[in-house]
Image 1: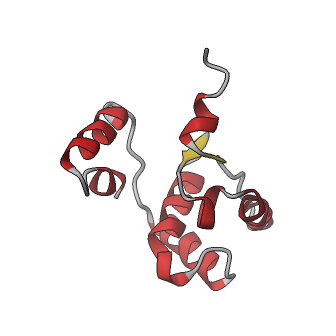
Image 2 (image 1 turned 180 degrees about the vertical axis):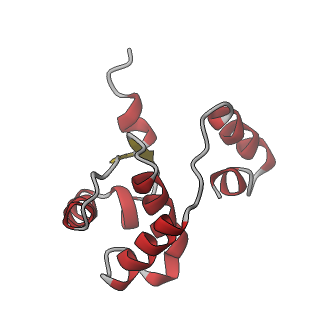
Length: 110
């Protein structure tokens, strides 16, 4: 799903995005991730119209990723939504990945 999204859009920018993720390990979309994503939508943590965002989050959570890097401030990485996501995932027995923007992830690497 990440590779498909990274490869979409402007060809030059998609090549850059694909180069950035080349070699990173891929997480499998499991039944547990699908169930969690559906639960996040049902709980209105992530809107149903952006189910793929819920699935990204659930896959990273179930796959025990350290980070979920995204530019999606509205549904995933905004300060207020982060708190709701983290609280809901912990309530469901999961440790959430650190939700961050690419800029935040790279901060301090000077």
